[in-house]
Image (cartoon, rainbow, N blue to C red; front, side, top):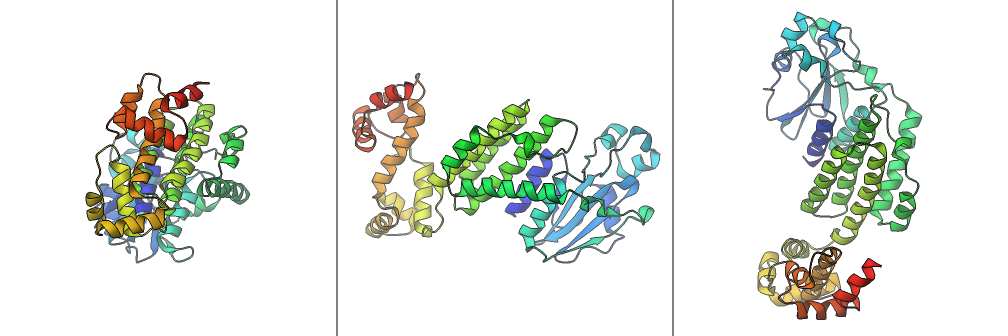
Length: 372
């Protein structure tokens, strides 16, 4: 269901509805009526529905769920196109119908759908079937298939390079990218608003990046936290340049996330302990508590943790707390004592001692170096 939820979020930013239900009792009464007349989709089959005025829908079944995507158009609808038959058939007023999203042949929608179905069933392991509404038997849905293959291929290659750099945590490449990246060279011209185009592309990349991080073994809670943060930032920006900067920041932050939180290949017991530590590092954690969370004895957890992580449980906890405190020390309004307590140290003296052992300088010295 992860890829379905990812796709639903991306489509919501494109103003396209995606409904996931256990049956065919969809919210849209027009679709409910159509479902009574058509041959419903079989396993690994996507049905394309074209209704009145070329209003389109996609419907398929997956994992005991029925998924509806739409309505959407492939050409802009003018006010003169809307008559009483369309109003009564689809419901709503003219303003609502004029807001039906438009899927352009060169836009993000078709590649997104291909990515969704390839992830659900594997490339080539599913079929498409047209199922027109009776009033438009001759309408061909395949207009979606006409797109610039060279342009799509070029963009996919660039995205692949970016995702690979993030996956490998290649900060040298990402640093060079920060001085030359121009999102306008990569983005699809989906509509007349260039800022919206860049926002849409950044939303797609945010989705691809969070899937990459999750596939690399980063816990879902951390992936979701970073993804949601960037989602809000992207929506709030008003210039293409600002979106370009966020794009570079996003690539770098996901790389850091993978570097610091990728637990791929770790034993499940160690993953559970790491999750407890990383989510509760501010608290007083004991070996007894951590061993219970892993379902292991204290002694066995200590040996296993040292073997997998190359350090003791409490060395890991102290290093994590120190790294977290660096973010606070960058803020001149936060005192050394506040940083210590906020990151789980009982007093400033102990914090300073651990900090110097790990960083080679005191917190005060580190802060002075940072300011320069």
